[in-house]
Structure formats: C-alpha cells, structure tokens
Amino acid sequence: MQGVGKAIRFHGSKLKHAVLQQLGIKNTVPWFSESSRFGSSSLTTALPTRGLENTTVAELLKSKGDNDAEFLYWCQTNDTVYDAVKNMTQHNVGALVVVKPGEEKLIAGIVTERDYLKKIIVQGRSSKSTRVGEIMTDENKLITVSPDTNILKAMQLMTEKRIRHVPVIDKKMVGMISIVDVVRTVVDQQREEVKRLNEFIRGDYY
Image (cartoon, rainbow, N blue to C red; front, side):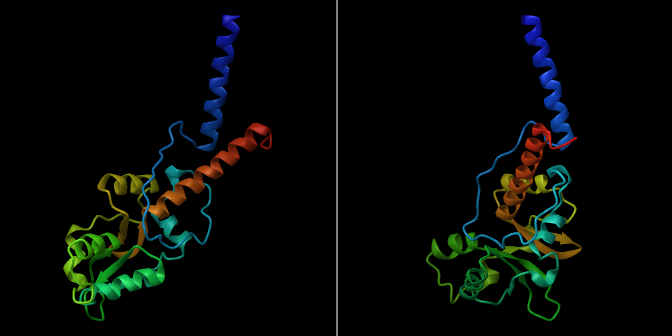
C-alpha cells in the first residue's frame, strides 16, 4: 500500500508540475497589500493572458490608455501646492508629473499626495503659498522604470523602495504607473491563469 501511495503522489506531482508548466504558473505566488490613498485610472482594456513573467510596463500603460505622454497629468514647478492637489483630486490620481515652465515642458520631478501630507499638512504650511517645486521629488532623485521592465520587477522595486508611483522613461517621460495599477494587473493575470487551470482540469482542454 505504501508503494501505491508513493506512486500516486509521484505521478500526481508530475501532473501538477506539467499543468502549471503548461499555463506558465509558478508554485510560489507573491502577495502584496500596499495601496494608494488616491487610486489611479482603472484599466480600460483587459491585458492578454501571457503570464506575469511576459507582461511588461508598456502593456500596462497600453491597457490604461495612457501610453502616450499627452495622457499624463502634470503641473508646473511654480504652481501652488493647492492647485496641484486640486488637480489630483479632480482626476482621481495620486501623483502629478512636474514640468519646468516653458513650451518644452521639461520634466522637473513628480509630486505626490504623500509629499502634500508630509511637507504641508504635518509641518503646518500653507498649500496656497507654497510652490510645487518646494516639495516635489526632484528629477535627480526619481526612481524610474522603462516600458520594457517586467511587471513583477516593477512591483518588487516599488515595494522595496516603499514608493507608490513610478515614472516610465524611454529617453523621455512616457507614462506613470502606481502600485494600484501593478497589483490590479497581477491579480487579473492570476485570475485568468487560475481559470485556465480549472478548465484544463475539468477537461475543457484537449
């Protein structure tokens, strides 16, 4: 009987491995709970189920509909913090790209709701008399990703650095992703993979 049990466990393990390999699912699935106070724009187009290891930031931006720089929400360094926060709340986003005054709109940094809380509210400063340039994260200190960055690597970077928003740079600013965007993408991909696994087990795949 012990021999039969070992054989069942052995072949069952091989079957499980084969099924997971077929679907591109790893045995270990990362779970994260960090979220942003201000949610970014929800995904407008479902990502194709390719597996997390094959999903890039570029695909995430495309699914959001803001893979063009014209879709970025921004403010200028000389805008008041009050106007910047008002802009965030109107568009339901947690961060703005900050550009330098002028027609070229050269990137100067980013400003987030965390900057507002830590550098205005906690310090008792006036948002109407403080300029964005005084509280923003300067471009030289920005942590960025590229369009080709894997979605899991982007998540790892954001959780390790404890940041909620990351600019996407491809020689110039092409977008912005939030931890909410990344987690939503991971969850959607995992949900589809579990669905495919269930269909495979039920015999819907031949």
